[in-house]
Image 1 (cartoon, helix red, strand yellow):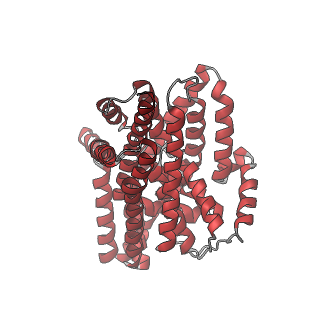
Image 2: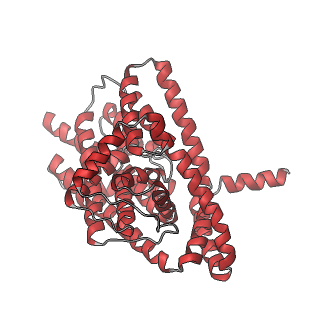
Image 3: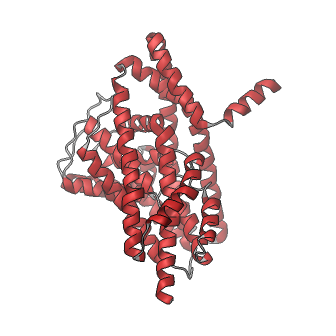
Length: 406
């Protein structure tokens, strides 16, 4: 029994990336050699997707409520311009992802993609749907996975509890940590779930599905590279009027590389704080902006949400006009701010964006499963972009403010 327990402990604490890779490889092998058995193993993938569907609504509601309620008041820092850069950077990332997704539309092979979807008739119907989902009953929103309503109630309740007692805020934070622990447990099951998803998908549709995954990953990484090496330097230049690349490249090297392997913006906070100290930034500013950025500065998450949502939309043949695409960019940017600090957290917010286009929750959660398959690389690159950008924008504002007082 002790040996079994220790074996289980080693597996549970093992490298999730390597375990997911093993799950993908085993799924491909099983589908190739024993396609009949692979179809039956698809039950594991269905259970994994079901667990995601169960935890995602509660995760969004609790995390957003706790984050807003626990924001500190009366901070005398340069936070306002940093927050502006966070928002501009995140929205720019979503918009870049939209442009690339339209230039290189990707379709996915989903096991249950035959489920009919009701395409919206332009921006008017999308806004109408959005408004009615905002005013949904909060209990019904959680039961039916209405992410628009969940987000609206979470923001409202968070603002209302912003002036609550410290005890109430502490309870919210404890509940948030508890839900995050459950999410971590579910994500630890990803190798098993992905093994089932890959084996059943390939056994049912063949290797054609992998082509869509490869193109999807290329679009995601290209968008992140454009933001990291193109858009972010441009924003820094306009703020500081100096060559941005020494700062950007140093942040990618000293923050992005570690974030790539930890795959957690929260885990990379000490690294970013130490880097800010090396850069001789204002401590009162970066001590607030770095932890906050790990929560709301999510350019990589905005890219992931946008690209995967549009992949689902293109798969179902839904036409998207320019105004609707712009609305998606805004929703993706706002949704990204509520992304969980755990690995793969942004994937759980994809159904929120998908709901704008009438995409069913079942199909949306299958797209989340696809995200976990490519997440071996996608989530690492996403975290590297998110975390390094926290330092980039904090440093840009601190240097700009210092030059004004010099």
